[in-house]
Image (cartoon, rainbow, N blue to C red; front, side, top):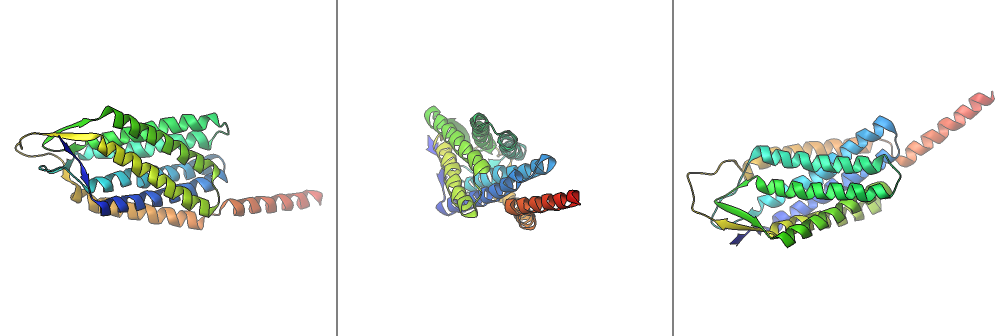
Length: 256
């Protein structure tokens, strides 16, 4: 049985990307808390793309680019890879909407369990997208451990999304979230072993490097757009001050 090896440099880059996604996501949820209705939904959707897309799925894919199995190339089934991305963004969105539109603390654990299980499923769907000369088998205990880590990480992320406001705390929470998400990924990878078999005519799917360019272009575009939207939008304090000013104007108008 063979294991997946990983490149340290790629792992560090993947961690950095997960932190960036977490920062953007938490900034978006901060804006969401200060708005209502459709505005809140839009901010939460943007947060889901940042956390679920950049912070989790892109981290997973970049880390996979640094993974190797001795004696066989790795190819990626594109439809299944895209499915894993949709799953990642979707389950994070559901978790954020659960905690974003309710004040009951019990829903935090419901959202965390659902999102964490979904993130774990995303990881193993992403693994199912790999084509190689062999069969992948999993250690059940390590798989269970990766699911537990994913649920804990997701619950912590949702708690941070609901409670953290100060920018310094957002940065600290993002580094911690990055550690948790990457830890889940590497435990999941440690659970995988490959039973090699003889090379056949060829492997279907795309080389990971061929997927890298559109991935980088997509990440760059989404990240820049999200940063621009956050930078140009009023923060919670500015929104509160605007509401207070409007209330004072209304009182003066009504008085006269």
